Image 1 (cartoon, rainbow, N blue to C red):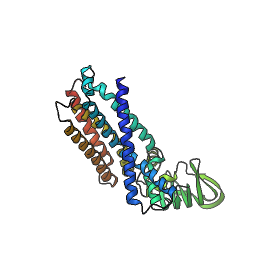
Image 2: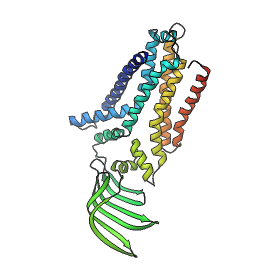
Image 3: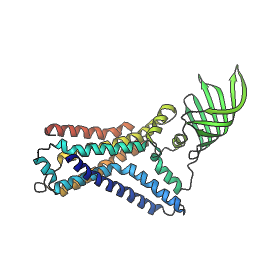
Image 4: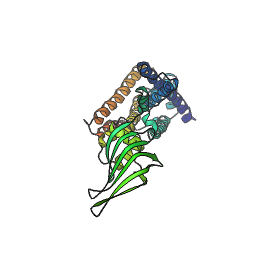
Length: 340
């Protein structure tokens, strides 16, 4: 019963803060961008929705730690925490609902980060800038193929003036020419493709329907030119199949999305161990103020490391260091507190 009691309080506070933070961020952004948003009411609502999804995916670690601190403050204020201890509950048992529910929230966000929701910020920018996310003059290496695309529209999954050079032992053996190609059933299709084939030092030409470049997803292609965000699944495909890309940038985005909430989890352990159990023996408001400040500072530090790593100033693995440092601190504190 105690588990669901704490879980209910924490979940309620988390959902309130989660939606409040996301909505506030979206409203503030709309206020500063209102002149750039099209006058269409449908596009306005769509822009607001995309910004809410983007802000939620970015700020949810703060919502978790804020909800944890508010719930902890309520339990201290109404003598619930000290009552649990007096009934024989060990700290690990009390902290368990916070930890498990936070893991569930984080896992849910990881699932969203593996879908098109990860690109919600780009979709919002496209509405504001009245663009269709089209990309031009792409030159990429994919497996044993070199691809040139004059114009790509990832929304409609259409590429124009596509040239694909098939390599074998560093020599060109085939060339595909596609005036217009569509991405269908996880591969590209052109109904009027020209194919040049090298055979015995001479070129032969064919004209036919062509299915080619499996898993060569339009959103990945478009995103590689100016990488702002990427989903977990697209990051996996990009690192696996593309050769001439900056993996540090992609992995910086992935590591920031993974380790920022994990850092918050490690911080929750530290704060719970250090939390006072009663208002009479310590200054609870001061503890909450310090905890909130530390949480924001730590989240901001992760964001700063991410910006440096994304620009290539730092390696992507530096985003793991705050998490490892907090784990070491948590381990030392827990060893000293045998009851935990």
